[in-house]
Amino acid sequence: MTKDWRDDAAYAHFKSLDLSGMAWECLRRNSDYRADYPQLREGQKSLAAWGLRFPG
Image 1 (cartoon, helix red, strand yellow):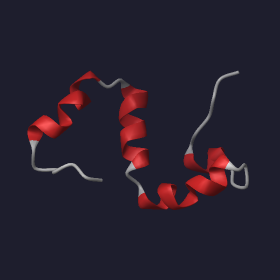
Image 2 (tube, rainbow, N blue to C red):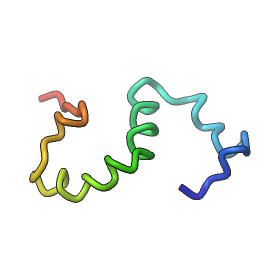
Image 3 (cartoon, rainbow, N blue to C red):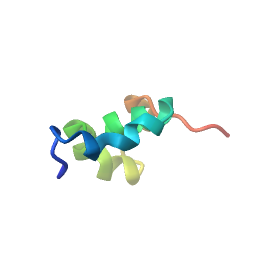
Image 4 (cartoon, rainbow, N blue to C red):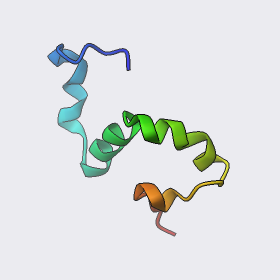
């Protein structure tokens, strides 16, 4: 993450996030998720393990 966590302006967009947007912001900052991402993308790990689900 390249943003300065002490700079309020760097996080102004948080005010407009809905629940799923906030969840995504938290998830994408998780180092374990980032490590698993290549396997998730290839279908080698379950998205459900991270609480992800998609309607349809």
